[in-house]
Length: 479
Image: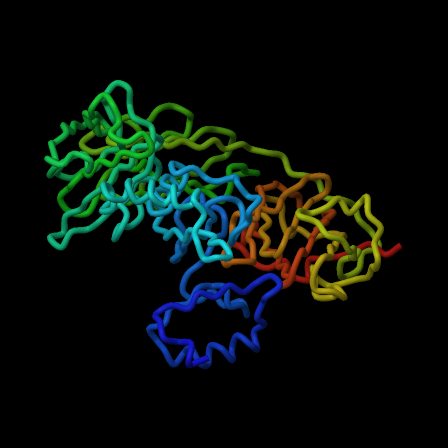
């Protein structure tokens, strides 16, 4: 093992059929810990996240709170497959690169060499296209960090800090404006310069402010139909006029709901309304010490103001008051949940109601370790959950590979394989639901495709934050 460590990075490709258990991972880490500068990805196994995450064949919707790189193929398969001619276009690959960089990630692109060690012509063509684009726009990719903007409808943005404390914003334009006016969210900084990277003379573009927006005057035609890049140099760190965030436990309420606002530019005032009207200079100013309390259905709106003038877009969120789902008058209950065990090969959670169980029994929580095999199985857990008080609840699950949760007839959580905290374990957050105090029917469906079976349930409620669903609140009916 020590003989292999001659580089700065070890890129593990474990998981699935090649999983390393915790005992073996600990043995490997005992060696790698002797190399403190060594970086390793999260695919070693043993449930160790290590240095960075590796989402595969997709780009996260938003940036992640940790280092990551998307691993993706030029077509649909890893390695070389003579029959796979579903190649991603050069434009798609370039825009994927820009999308990933704008969210703070790296792009690992698989080339798929042939048996004779040559690269397919289709791949070479795409690499040349990417290289041609990079010859003009490389500075907008290398050494940059994630966009300071929440969203840019026409494209993406990346950022680079200068040694003198100023900032370069690289505005990547996918959809060029026909009227020659590129509308960008406003930054409250002095504009030093603005020009197209494709313009060798760096001819300056006019930038003007219009309320919460910046208007950049651009040529009538896009320099690059795939992605044109504008460099905007500003003084200092970007003070972006993103609208204030609206924070609440849920978008439904039972009796009352506290709403708070948050902004990255606290020197500005947050003005809001809770009656659906547009915020104005006459609207109340939000204070951190005084959350807004809602008692009925309404729409909350908020924006940033300075000197009585709105300088950000308006953010809004609808809140709906709901009556609680009634509890059941359950009797003859005892501790634990019933489980049914199934075997099969599925790509998603199947309808266990149409399948024949191979085994059944009782567990005190959703325990998938009672399954006699490691892969290609499913389990249904059923019984009751005891709700401590009437109010808004939300269920959460960590799992591999799929999990659905129902309360009574209502589906409150569905699997989402696109939200991950490492290469294999998934996380999903369910929809909020108003539940009355006492017992409610609970059903949890789980399936496991390949190694590393895992299931943990959590919930949050009116008087507690996210915590495990423990055995003390789970029951089943005795016949």
